[in-house]
Image 1 (tube, rainbow, N blue to C red):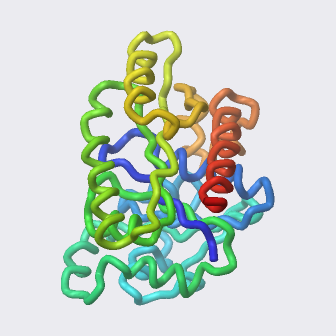
Image 2: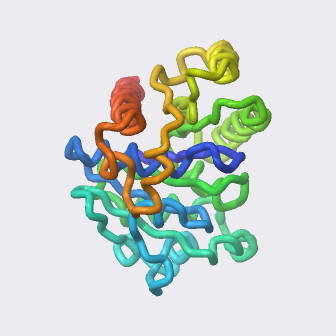
Length: 259
């Protein structure tokens, strides 16, 4: 069975999608078979991988509702070993449709257990809210990665998110673990970034990855070319940071499996 990692934060614009697709790309480069599930109605992970959302195809919406299998929805990307289940705007209304389904919190887990057995890792790009869609991702996941933008407003919702993760662990998924917190959009020229980093490391301790993701224009440009930054500009600071971060993620995965 694959290891399933949800990339989540209740705040938008913190780098969830960028972190998801670039960790997935770096994992695939090491020979891991990786599946990304785009659960955000905005579909930014799909766009970042050059998937044309206007073309009618099966999506994570149909997989979540049990209308399509994982195999029917998978799209292969130009990155070897990396496939994706694209998003759909219909996900915005999935909460209403899930309400009347029995064991609605387990729909995604059921689909992945049945259809993702040939992957080493499944990374889930969550929407920026604690909806039933996000709850499905956390119930399905073995671990959570939380991207956190280096500004004070980004700190406001993270304690609530950790509380939510603990509630889901208690009620639905006792094996769920916080894999780590990754600091994104870090500007070493700005004292604010250092202050936020100090606060986060004091609060979360070793759960914070040593690697920080810098503010880097190449990271921002890459999605408009339908590529992760690792393909768009491998040598830029953003790419090198994501390579380092993926190394830490894989190391922590080995440590979690050894426990």
